[in-house]
Length: 313
Length: 271
Image (cartoon, rainbow over all chains, first blue to last red; front, top):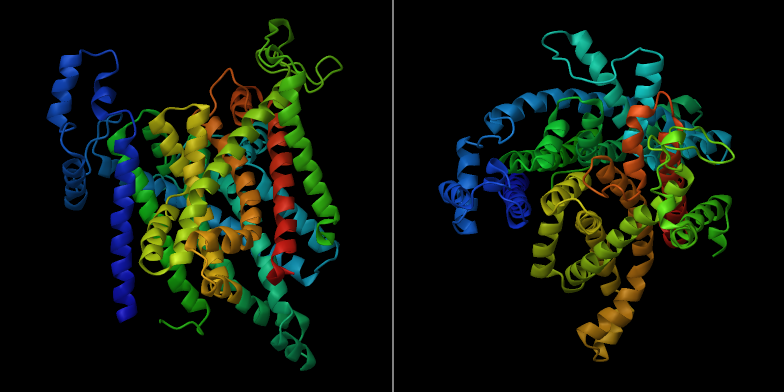
């Protein structure tokens, strides 16, 4: 019980710090909302008037308090470029992005675990070399480069998938999946390379342990040893690393969604940054950081499901 | 040292050295206007004897541009990692050495910063400061600092509890003396590994920033910017994207290979 209480307290504190950092980065740095709304060529008096009306001359603590107050009461402000409430925009875009986040994570795990196990089982032989080299190349290329290559191959040359755009799953699930596939693949490849490396190194460690030798001595089939006993021990760390990569994914979706013109959270963040839509930047940055933090928490809890030896301390 | 002399270690080191030399030497031997000179009659030419790697949509020679881009891309990445070391080392060292309240406060801040995806943090800082090379360095440098601080802290925590540090303390060494002479030199190996890997990620981050228009600005040549410019011409001139893409890949691959080998050399647990 006290573990859960401490954990909740720590989440609240971290969320509070996230709001401070978000606010600091977007407020202390040059560029303000008034200039954004009126443009740099506007009348200085009108600009000063707007600054006053928006409360931009107030002390920072007061401005922060106002922002937090709005966040807590559900008033997240109005987007300067889209002219709609930020909260509505976010809900809509999070739904769009969750599809590619889940798909890319799925693609990465489905490919990485067997590849990593295969490399570990054939340690120091050509299979290991081939899979490790492929993974190393995978982590060395920027995601957007994969994305461009995929557009060129699967959309322009083969015409199998649309090269850009977003389709609403509630209108046509098939269209939605087709539009989400290439961005997910581009995101998933880099992730897959990381996870393959992780699975290989964890499995290599586990296959060298005592209980594996006992299993072999007992005459268990190699397949049973690898897939049932060794993998059961390796999956915890792999899931942990996969969960920690949620942060990496949320960074990468900014580039990938922009490249594929997939109008989700990443695309929205980019539009906000490009147009210095400060209320929108504050909301998107806060939401992404909060999601990443909660994903890390979920990983900790999941770890306990996969590894019953770990107790709540 | 022996452990570094593997095929992977040698290849990784060779790639890194080649790229660093290119970054240093290219601007000295290639006249600056070679990278920006436009020849409208020679647009989107495939690789040939005249243009070894072809030309781009403005008739600029890709070989010169990719060579000159090495300095921008590696320079930004190197300066950003250096900045994260300068900021992250003292933070991590203070947390690991003094422990207790200092550690709690600093690590709470570092952990919170780790909730922000590196690219998101770098893009936000760069967008707020205004896109330029110095701002890209600051943005990437700040985004990478928490990772380094975390690793330095862990190592400092371990080393501070070693008997030789205890002995030096008993002999009357001051905190500063302990940190500089006994703790710092012994935490360096894992930090060199992390810095190498960070450098690889920083090259990718710079490319992403420039690709999105929030890093290096034209007419400067940077690999991310070149890939961005190639997008509309890939059907007819795929080399315009493949050349800078390969430059990024070779550099990051070399850094990752060196990082892997350095880790094997320095970290006995993974042997």
